[in-house]
Image (tube, rainbow, N blue to C red; front, side, top):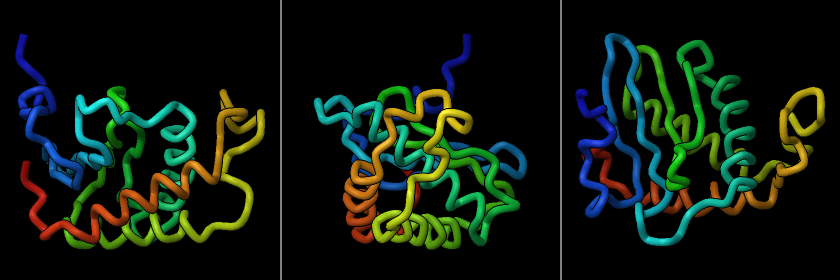
Length: 149
């Protein structure tokens, strides 16, 4: 079997940041790496779930709403994938940063926080989402703009 693209990345040297994982036609997959892989510092389920609810909602309602195909957590608990149609990397980075800032300053109820809207709504925590988004925004503010592994 062919090795999938994300398994060809050397996770022993990968640092937190934002990377173009692959491009398939008009769809770009971004690796939004919030944690250093295999370092023992992983997001718990509640944090991943909460960030997913906030960012998926904000991104799909923001400037790129018609282009966002998917946003969701990595199984390894070290980041998220964002798939965008006809992506401009700089624009995607700007919109992502704005969604992180909007999460950090959000004062309402976390999106999709009731039983009929979510299959595990009891694990949602706005405070965990805010904390994780704040950490990741600090990382993104420190990158040089290169999105290559």
